[in-house]
Length: 198
Ligand SMILES: [Ca+2]
Image 1 (tube, helix red, strand yellow):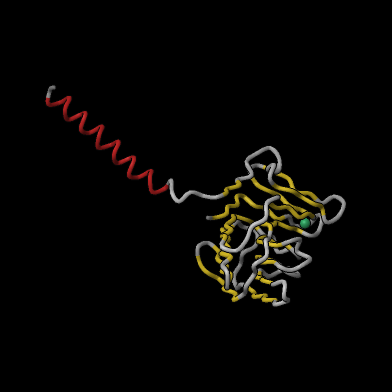
Image 2: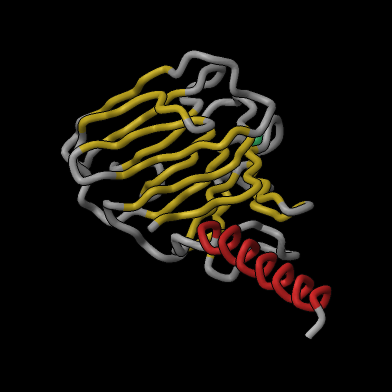
């Protein structure tokens, strides 16, 4: 083997090792569930229900668009789960994203516009404990990465990697990840991607 060939082989080997070292950390931990809304229609394991005639959940250019409707996963989940999503709230009344049953009956754990114009972290337990915390800042009209850590004795709300609120609350019920925009027309709620861990 010539010295030049030997050097080329060693370079190839080092490159392979370098690539493996770079790729392996990004391939773990395994994501339990990622929904990117890249399909032509609502994912098969999601449902949608209109609040009023004309309400709908649709897929447009890789985004879930919810207007006057409630949409979420068919599967139920329990505490110990983290929900992370990139979404654009408009500030219209009653836009909610998080965990819930149907957003009428408790329990829920949500980012919500409540009556409109302000973003809130909201938690309500089946026992009636209600926590509604306004989140200072300008969040409407642009996408942000929201996260809810649903832990056994507390829930943690984060935006763009920063914790914005923590609620001491115990919610042991099984809930659905739900996206809801109440009024048909006006603003729509847009979700680019949603993932659950572990
Ligand atoms: Ca709307």
